[in-house]
Image (cartoon, helix red, strand yellow):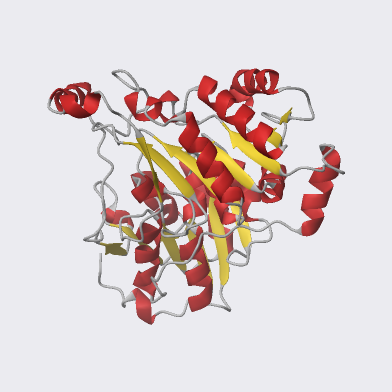
Length: 380
């Protein structure tokens, strides 16, 4: 499938980027998209994206337009949407066979993506994995129990540590940068970037009654769509929020989806009245969420999509990592000192599981006091 001219010598006029399917992953593609725009400033760049993420790209300088598709939409229907646009180059960011098949069926002449099983036939150029790439290995319960049993001394002292995103080549943003380097774009990392206008921020502030607030506005995001293994215990969020509020007189904005409403209601009730916390779970559009995260002075969050959104909007983040790895998916540009990442020394972390098969020591090892210190340091 490599009989075509090297893609780095091409001069595409119309480029399709097949986007990724999750909010946090989509934010981590923005450095690659910005580098692609830098390489082809006059090309029309369109993003094929799940419709739930389409508004993420409003006002984004790397993208001229989006082609949304619905969850569960027929493969051939998606391909049919692409044909009238006459794209001459497609860059496929996901690793799935379906994403490569979509652009194949749309008859886009140049189709570039990572070499992966069951899809290479559909691409005109495959890109080998980076030598520095780190695969996310899901540990089995047996493997976790073996690690814990072999490390009894640390089992008694699972305490947290504060990290920064180390500036190594392991981070996920490098996966996307390496792929767009196949068309001659610069693979040097940039900070993930999203954009909201001052008018959006002010309209959202007015809609949710946030005018005339005297103290600082902090964000708190206690959920994680991936699963409970990524969620710090709610009673610890409550304790941290209470202590931080007493020290700063902040107003907490509580973020989340519909499934997080019970958790955010519990936090709001324990934190105080509406002058202390406003429960916004399930009440915001994606653009409103972005505007509110931009408004916050600091956001306390699990490792989840809004964590990446906040950092990409320039808001300092305090992020708690348990089953996942800050080295791979930390917020912002690796090495950015504005963000404070907390992780325990649990030997089984990261396991990349949705649910903990033992005693949740990775998250329980992150102390309330360390979180309070990190939020105050990020705010100052």
